[in-house]
Length: 153
Image 1 (tube, helix red, strand yellow):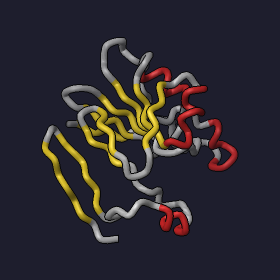
Image 2 (tube, one colour; image 1 turned 90 degrees about the vertical axis):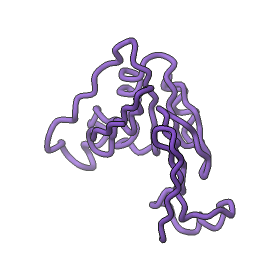
Image 3 (tube, rainbow, N blue to C red; image 1 turned 45 degrees about the vertical axis):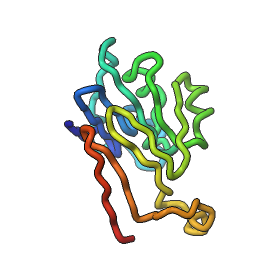
């Protein structure tokens, strides 16, 4: 498994099976009014090569994490884009094959188990409405080996 940092919050993970592109950002124009011009150009993300199996992941709707054009250009037709349930219809309207994931659910992308957890920047009052599960446990799978990791909050 290889991981490479992209621009802003973006990450590309490559496994033997496929790639996972998380929060790819190329279009910085929606951020200009808030942040000004970028200090350096965004990391180039190549167009889909026609053969590599690539999944996408959008962690949330903010314009520094969701760039529909970059996703369409880099993933190829029919590629899966995992995202929070709340933004599925928006991604579908943008022509993406959105797969909504609810908080605390897990999905497998690029051979990696991904778990959706409550976003940290939501007001804490939302935590009272979550299912009664252990919020301090993160599960992930790397190269077929299940690993459980606990962290005290």
